[in-house]
Length: 210
Image 1 (cartoon, helix red, strand yellow):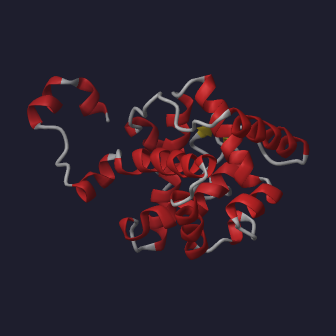
Image 2 (cartoon, helix red, strand yellow):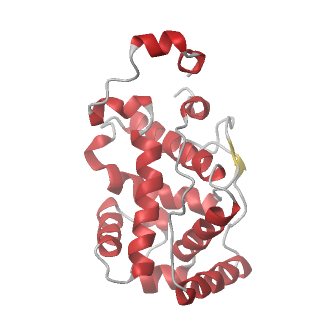
């Protein structure tokens, strides 16, 4: 399959720079402790660098600047549950769309700035660190072994949770994923957006270069 994921960088939508994850003092202290512990326990918290999200055996065309290898695995498990029937049925096309979306998630987070990046790192570490993944997410398996049904159940629990820490965690995950997926021109038709008008494409060079 052609390695097309490098093109996602050219079509990455501008994500909001406003904070996605707001917690109280207790929640912030808790997440900070989790992030530190996750790093000490060997969780991959450094950017994955130049790898292919489609297939690590292929020549990498994109360099991750924020997402770690564990984060990539996390989103590979969550995106099929978040988008369900919106993803292509063909396995290769489906894999490509998931990989390209993960790359755009990385690009979007890079634009957030240090404070928001710090909060997202704590959230991702919470989900990648086995003790907190089991305790708070109630996900018993490592993310590569999690089924789409199990990932969907986790997302529903956090979405409907009365705990602000968990509910805001769901909001953060769903927002960054939805903007990266539906904000790309490949998915505009799913939202009924016809794309920019012809006069705008002709007038603005960035549309021609997209």
